[in-house]
Amino acid sequence: MLRLIPAPLHRLAYRCADALRIRWWQLRQPRLTSVSVIAVDFDDRLLLVRLSYGSGAWEVPTGGVGRNEIPEDAARREFREETGIDPTRLLLIGEQEERIYGAHVTTHLYSTRISAAPRADGREVLDARLFPLHSLPEPLSNRTRQRLAIWREHSKQR
Image (cartoon, rainbow, N blue to C red; front, side):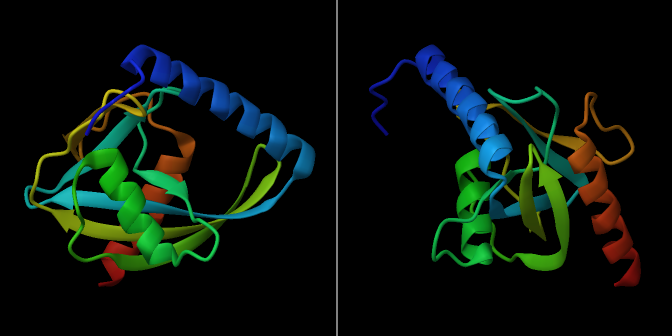
């Protein structure tokens, strides 16, 4: 894919857009829908990403659901955009209600198994890696910790 904007400038644009989005959410307190995908490979390593904006913490791939978009389709799109991997099968494991910067957010949580290695684009995603479940990196975002707790509970019930 042809990239017309240099990567450092692209990352700066992401940081500026994120700051504007936070202000907008604080003012408007919208109701939003998002998705998160918890992916492990066949060696039971967890896929985590670090974005070029936000807290810099490691997170599971997450993103917004577009207008008239089905959450599962959004999960596939976001996962592909952030990791370079097309998930073959997504399993809905739960929903999480959150307040994020004043916005009321309903997050649909999905899980999947992957066999390919993730790729960071160096623009939105600075790093994408697989980690053993017993040795997750720090800092790990609080939201990711909460989502992993839901995933673990769901895994026990299966």
